[in-house]
Amino acid sequence: MNKKLAALLQQYNLTVFENMAYGVIQGYEISVRVPNTMEQFCYIHATFYATEDKKNAIAAELAKSKPRLGAALTAYGLKVAYPVFIMSSLIKNLPVIFQRLTDLLKQYEAPGAEFCPYCGQPLDPANKKRCSIDGFSVTLNADCVGSINKQIDEENRAFANAPNNYIQGICGALIGGVVGAGLVIGFYFLGYVASVAALIAVMLGAFLYRKFGGKPNTVMIVIVSVVSLIFILLGFVAANLIEDASILMTNDLGELLENMVWQLQNNPEGYARAFYTNLAMLLVFTAIGIGVMIFSLAKQIKRPKNIS
Image (cartoon, rainbow, N blue to C red):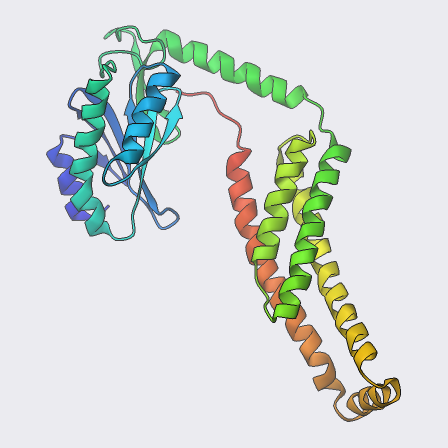
């Protein structure tokens, strides 16, 4: 962690370890996750018990504050996200964020660190447990930990027993693939080769896979990725065929055939090089796009694990 940032966090009596910090600020349990090379946000989790309406109201206030903050509801409070482009900006604004966040929690009379964020009851000093949940430290009554784990087990069991609905899911993936192929054709005639076609194909395919009833699991990622790749390659072939057809329609057939024969006889390697170069570029950008979406989807379908 950046030394200046670590020093700032320690001024708030937070315990700093690796890219995390934890402690109590203004009576509220706070966890901070500093961005690493794979993230562009600093995440701050404030632990407190409140109704969903009250959490939404606090999140709305944070969205209007300066700096503007995105906040997501959790079962144990709020997760606040601050975009980090340069570390000096985070160091400058973090005290403002802490103050704004704790002021709002007090304004909405959210219970502090001495209450369990899951049940709202006072924490039992002899029967409380600090758990790691989604990378943040959250203190709960031990009885609540058991209830939460039981609920997680039941949900995971229900998910495992749910039907896969592969046929419905594949239909959704096919629609995403067709859209991806259309984008490839469009970009081809604009003179571009981009990964956006793969991104949209996989994203839309995965969305429709789930929308049509397919189970969001590893098989979904494989099916959507393979279908998207196949249709993107088909789109590339179709674009070349359309281009050839348009040339035939706008040129004298005899002269065109003579020119093609001459090219094949005198420069066969150069004649094919353009096709394979474009194909290679398409495959590279498609692999990048699909890789990005696989990483994103893998995080989305990750099933919750028991907390400890």
